[in-house]
Image (cartoon, rainbow, N blue to C red; front, side, top):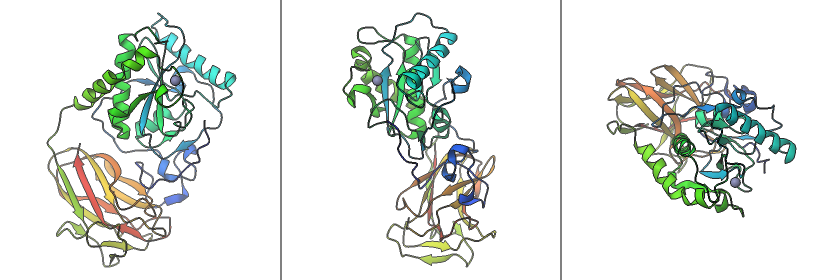
Amino acid sequence: MTGTPLSRRTVVRGAILLGVGAATGGLSLARGNPALAAPTDVTTFAVDPPTIASCATWGARTPGSLSVISSNPDKILIHHTAGANSTDYSQAHAYALARSIQNSHMDGNGWSDSGQHFTISRGGYIMEGRHHSLSRLQAGSGMVVGAHCPGQNDKAIGIENEGTYTSATPPAALYDRLVQLCAYICDQYGIAPTRIYGHRDYYATACPGNVLYGMLPQLRADVADALDGGSTPPAFSTIIDNATPGRFTASENWLTSSYSSERYGADYRYANPAAVSDVAYFKADIPAEGNYRIDAWYPGIAGYNTATPYLILAKSGMQTVVVDQSTGGGTWRSLGTFTLTAGDKNVVGVSRWSGASGYVIADAIRITRV
Ligand SMILES: [Zn+2]
């Protein structure tokens, strides 16, 4: 069920202090993997985050060993607990349910923690299941490996819905929160609502019951509606390449190469890492203050820098996102979503101040209003 090794990922959302590179992790769970350092930027959502009670809030036990991986889930699996259809819709009951599931999974099944990532009570309380599920969701990057469906535990977010839905219909309070939670998960991880499945789609089980399973097409449609429901800001997207006239500046220490076929455009710029202030800047004309997703393109080659600091000049101040440029190149990689102020200015920089060895690369940036 568990045991997927911690894998390195090329691009992650997160922020660490400039220059510390691979030497420091921000969280104990991120030890040795700066990619998982705590995000500090103001990340915004098209979908309002629902209230989710953390493990600490509902009184979880200390878990055993858990595996947090930096890859994102690609689907959601819907479960029912196959327990009683309680008519106690209180918060106290919901929290007791979460504790009961954890006890059963740890003591009965011998697992290290609750198997599922999230739990929803029949009264409509959403709770974190396995530790780290909530923090990773909020970051929109990485996940804790679950124990809710063999073969899917490192790919799917598992949601347990209180009750048995072989013939009964879930209460509206539960269903409404399920829509909200799924929409938030889809938004945070970039999962299409069409990728919401039932447990039985991936394992020989009756879960989540014929009735709830039969509601999945409606759930997908309702989640899609929720994702479309926000106000749509004016579309804005721009790509700045290192060769875009007047939009890229770098010192002569940044040399030009066309070596890797994964480059964006004709060439890219590269420099040796050094503890100097010598930033290559991408300039953009931001039309209005708002939220923008920023993607980076670089050629990923073994030997390039594993901890290249990208600097984002966000409204809240300079944010640093560290990217492993030794792999995963040749495509757009999200650096996250940031609040930017209006104006024609340097928005993204690539710093040479990396603790890791290998060339740092400045190739192309894409900024999209969200
Ligand atoms: Zn299930």
